[in-house]
Image 1 (cartoon, rainbow, N blue to C red):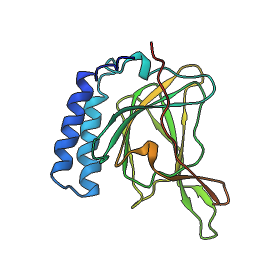
Image 2: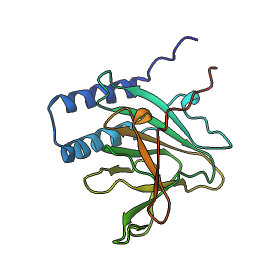
Image 3: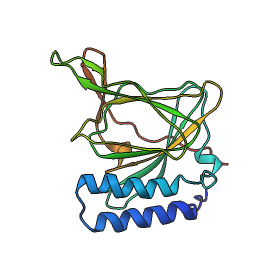
Image 4: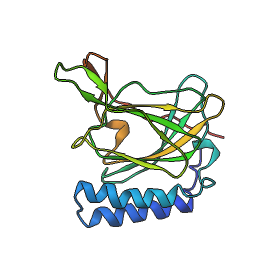
Length: 190
């Protein structure tokens, strides 16, 4: 199978992220400037190839778009079928999420003094062009779902590492956790 070429918009974004990270920025600087770069990438929705934007009926898809050779960051498309969602989970690295198509609902969580996880405010609705961030320094536990009951939604995620290989956790309401490594979905080889 011949690999698909990287879309020009993604190539520009990757070069801009590499340039940003070459300046040794702080995490808040990465989230701020990287968020601006991601907003530029998702300003148009036609650059993502169909094979990296295809939902499955049984679960959301996490397609790797780019992995920095030094694993400083990864870029992933999340493709949500109608009503699909994640469990409550963390990331352990900084992350940026930009909605490309559709709509997503994000529910952040925080720990109660008892150790249980409780919602940290109401869920946030994200629509195309919106960018959100996560960081272990200020809270990176949340659940995400496709806010549309009748159409797919797609978001572009940028993480401070190879997110498909990072040991993370899913959480129960009582705060207990189970480790996992997500890996990546395989696109249809068409």
